[in-house]
Amino acid sequence: MWMHRTIIVPASHVEIARELTEAADPAGAGMFTTALSATGDLPALHFISSGFISEQYAVILDERDNALVKAISDAAGLGYTQDEIDELLSVIDVSSEDAFSALKRLGLKICREVE
Image 1 (cartoon, rainbow, N blue to C red):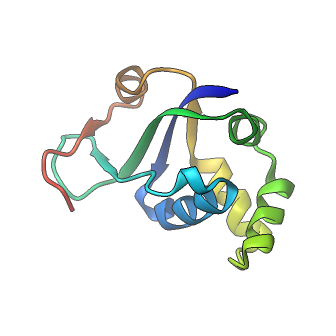
Image 2: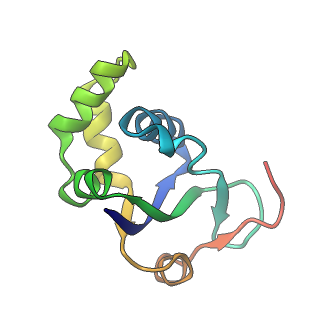
Image 3: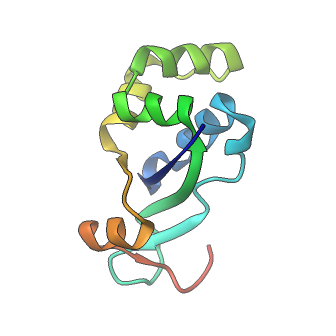
């Protein structure tokens, strides 16, 4: 089953989010490539991914299942610490809103230029 989620990650955490997302589900490769900022100008402050994801991945995000994310990191050999994972899950914004509603709520715009 697929569920819609909009996930917004601070730029400071985008690499760990990309790696863990791909480790959780190979379909997650290529997520978090759309840059965001308050003005629509670079530099990017956040990155967004919005669309349908597996129900399992949605539940992990909705419940902020830190232990399971750590297990995914360990199984993939990524080596992230529990503190790094806890911090990531505390700063991401996950909602079932469409992308534009989430952007409006957070005061963000899609960057006009690509990094």
